[in-house]
Length: 84
Image (cartoon, rainbow, N blue to C red; front, side, top):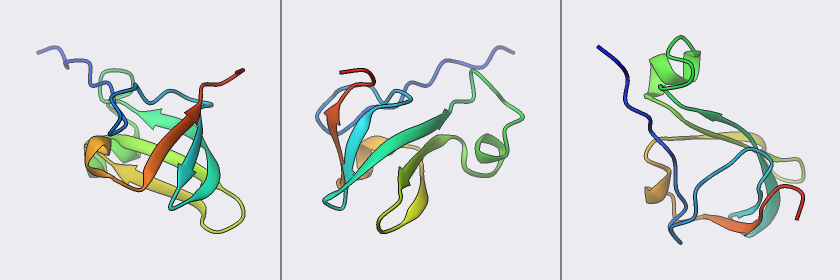
């Protein structure tokens, strides 16, 4: 059985992509990786949590994993895409 692609989205509707600049609880951060079952079913974040995203926030949290569905996480806001 094939695993269905599982894109992750912000509350605003934009897709969560690696390198995206974000605000996490009002603090600046960056999307480090997206643990998507369609891309890496053996990833420990996929097997333990069903997927999600890792956010780097060096000033406050260090790193924070947000399990799927990301769209339920109100404190994560997109600021800009990678390279923008």
